[in-house]
Structure formats: C-alpha cells, structure tokens
Amino acid sequence: MPNYFPLPYPDELIYSTIARYIRHHNLVDVYRTKPTSFRLDLFGNDCKPAVDIPVGISYLVNNTTLKNYDSEEEIVFKHTLFPYYTAFAGVKHRDDLLDGLLGNRNWVTRWNRISIFTPVCTSNSLKFCPSCIKDDTTLRGEPYWHRIHQVPGVHICPTHETYLQIQCQSCGESFPKDSEEYLALYDVCSNGHSLLNTASQEKESASLDKDLRYAKDALNILDNPTCYELEYVQALFRAKLQYSGLASINGKVHVAKVCQALVEFYGIDFMRRMRSLPDDNSATNWVNILFGKQTNPRHTHPLRQILLIGFLFPSFDAFLASKPEFLPFAHSPWPCLNSLAGHFNQDIITDCKMSRSKSLPPIIGTFTCECGFKYSRRGPDTSEADRLRYDIVVDHGNILREKIRELYFEKHLTIHQITKRLGHSYPLIRKALSSLIIKTKSDDDMRRAYREKVIALIEQSPTITRNEIHNKDRRILLWLYMHDREWLDQICPQ
Image: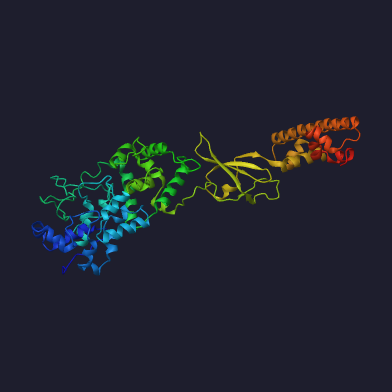
C-alpha cells in the first residue's frame, strides 16, 4: 500500500486524484514504462484510465490511505460521474450498477442493459476553466480536473460563468480522454504556455443563459445525488405538459408539439450542439421514446432529461418541489356559487368536467352542483380565491326558476322588482320567466287535452278501469298520474 495517497479535493474526479498521486511521487516515467504493473498495484486489474467512472475503486480505496478518508461508496458518489448517469435510473438499477461496479463484476454489461451510459454530447478532451485553475492554485497550491466540467453537455463553468476550454489557446495542445496515461492538470501546457488565457470564452455568449442553466442543474444533481424513479419523473413531466397544453387532459403527450416547443425554447443551434435535436423518425426520436410505450424509456440520456427540466420548470428547485399531479382546480370538493342556495360557497360539488379550448391554451373546468347550478371558469387556479369565482354560469338551476315562479305567479311582482330582489340581471330574469310561461302554458294545454280524452273514454264505457285506459293510451295515464293525480283519482278511482 502506498505510504501516501492524496485526498480528493472538492468536486475532483478520482481520475484527477490518481494523476496528482503520480505527479507527487514523480511516477510518470514508471507508469509509462510499466503501465500494467502500476495499474495492478492500484486497482487489482489492468484497467485503462477512465475519466467518468473508473473500475477498481473498491481495491484502490482499501489498499491506499483513502480508506481513512471516505468509504468506497462515497468516493463513487463524490468523485465520479456516477450520480449524474444514474440520476433517473431508479434506485433498483442504481444499486445494481453500484454493486457491480464496486464488486468489479461485469458492470459495463449492466450499464449497457439500461442504456444510460450511451454517449451523448461527449467531449474527446478533458475540459478546464482558467479561472478555476487560478483559484485552485491560490487556495490549494495546485489545479485539478473538476468533475462538473467533464459532465456531457457542460460547456460553461457554473462557478465563474465562463466557457470551458479543451486546449491551450497558444499552441492548441489538448488533453485527450482516451490517453493511456493519467493526465494531471497544470497552469501551463507541456510547451510552457499559460492555460489562464480567457480570450475566447465569450464566443458563444448567445446561449450563455441556457448553457449556464444546464451546468447548474447538472451540478445540483452531482452535489445532491438523489436517484429519481423514472416513472415519477415522467409523471412530473407529463403534468407540466398538461398544464402548458402540450399534452391532453387525459395525459397523452403531443410529441410533435413538444419537439417544436423544445427547439423554439433552446434554439436549433443549441440543440444540435447538445446532440439532442429531435428527429422525424418516431423510432429514434428521444422525446417519443421517453413518453412512448413501445420502447424502454430508460434509453433516454440524463442530459436530455435535464434539458426537459430546464424547458418545463423555472428552476431545479421548482422541479424538486413539484408534484406529479394534474390538478388545475385543486382537489374535490368545490364550492357551489349559487347565491340563492342554502349551501352557497360550501364545498359540496364533486362533478368537474375539464376541457381545453382549441383557440385558448387555458384549461376550462365546468362544475355542476346537485341543485342544478352549473358554472365554468378558466384555469389553472393560482390562489385560494380562484375557487370562489366563475367566468360563465352555464345553468342557474331549479332554485332560481322556482324563486322566479313564486315571485311572479304567486306574489305578482314585476320583472324589475324580481331583478332587484334576486340581484340578477333583467335579461336573465326575463329569459327565465319566458321559459316558465311557455312551460306553464304547455302544461295547461296538456292537462286540458288529456282530461278531455279520459272523459271521452269514460263516456264511451262508463265501467272502464284505469288499467284499460292504460292499455289504450299509456302516455295519458302516466302524464295525469305525474301532473294531475288528484283529478285522476276523482274521475277514475283505482
């Protein structure tokens, strides 16, 4: 076991720590001469250098002074990209992958089985921030490779908000990821040129905000390694798409509209640079794969899921605080807004039908009370006060009609007096009264006609029974039984 092994710095890749170990012990020539034996001593196997997630961490921790610093699991979660790649894999898959990684079993097969390690927007070179090199040298005496800088799709340092570099600005020397050696980071390249030059860092300032948002969201995932169940994240996405009109009320995602909105939000150049521009082929369109049923949705790379978070949520904290529910009008029951009812403003409505206007993005809720009062309003509700408002009264219900009947036919009030008494508009009262008059006249006509028919039947056959009348004309007997029963019992007893 080496007598000395450097401790990892904050946000340092374990790859970088190994490179510093080689530099501190002046082992570069030894490594170049005998790379196999060197790797066997550190990892217990002849694994080539891996920037993202190296193999042999368990052996490395248990056979160096690292075991006095952190457990092997903590090294994986704090100093590799494991939390990033498994953020949306689900706890079961993450633990299975971690078990294979630390056990040195065939973990690569496990990665490929759920396809979350498929390269998307990967860089062939290690990336660095000149400002971080300067700060790290001042604070710790040496620079190192930051973990967040190596995340796929991260092009900007979230700390200094300046673009990362992949090569020396003077001679063009780069730091290839697939190198057989562990490349340590210095403040100069191998040709002696300073790496602190920031001259070209504003060349992509048009997408600065989008790059910065993605980098900060990725950093949030690395610093707070929570594993989200894919089904839960899908439900969060689906609910937000429903609110925005990019999914139906029933939750069917309009994939073409989502793809178009994504491109409009990020810009086609940014989506191409992130290797995430949705294509027209539904079989390979990553948006369709994420929400479709025909393919394993775990094929969706975390980079693309973070892009969806940036598109749907104003911040990563808003994503964490959201709930996988589509409740534009909150939970049932809802209040009845019939001011004439004894249960006015009481939460008794359980019937809410939701729809969406083709010309308007808001969701429309139609609420129907047992008293017959029906109203609608646009959603979603943004405050508790929204529950006590409506945009349109679809039906005022029987309570209003019965009140108008009483005031007009029994108390003989005028329409103006009824309007003032009930607090409703003149046109509404007049319209309701017109329908009542028509219905009253219609009932009187029906009553007169049916009575005459029954009397005629009795005159033809004085001993006729009610059942015989029923057999001759069922409608007559049923209507009189419902609307004129007292007369029916007098003229034709059972």
